Image (cartoon, rainbow, N blue to C red; front, side):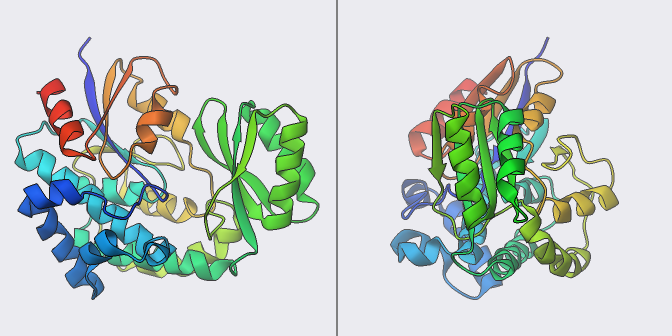
Length: 312
């Protein structure tokens, strides 16, 4: 049975000051990609990722284009260096937009403007300090879902990222998330950790953002993916453009089904999973999601070279 190749693209939380600095110094293509994004956005995105300030880089409407651009810079570098084209692409939350650019559904310039708007609408949907997210470690999904149901008391709280077996992220109104964390601890969770985010992603509080975002999604001339693309909302390969667009809108307020997405990528046998973006969050969570998954990442010159050698 031959091994398939899947490229997966990270979401928010993978950004860091100085990301891709060494690769940028060695490869003009990285800087050219950032320049293309900067021209579309109207500010110097590379300077911001390298010099900060960190608070600005961590603002949702700047974080999203920054991670997307870094991911596409690595993708272009991979292809330019003769790397093999993958059989599948997928992205975690925001990362789905990087996957869409890689699959030639839309251009980098369109995508960075789109995710900048996505970030802004997400921020506007819930005033700062009113929403929260937390990671719950060491409980079955069903127990976390039940804890959220009991903690809600008329407020929003739900399981929003099924990241790996025993790792679920919850999101919603701050007080409801805190109640759910206590219930999860009481149910035997190893840890319940508040996440340092300004927006409660993928829960019902984001539905107004999705309604406003629909116009931006409609304004783009989408193309069918040239590489099979597994979407977050369905955990299946997008079959047509209407479904693709609908799932992108629903992704704002529905869970990221990452475990099932990786299982979809590994459904036909062993898979080499390459994390194409800054950091290595997806490498960490994806190994435990399915049998036969081998992980690689590209975020440093050494990691890039090792992945090229392993996958030649």
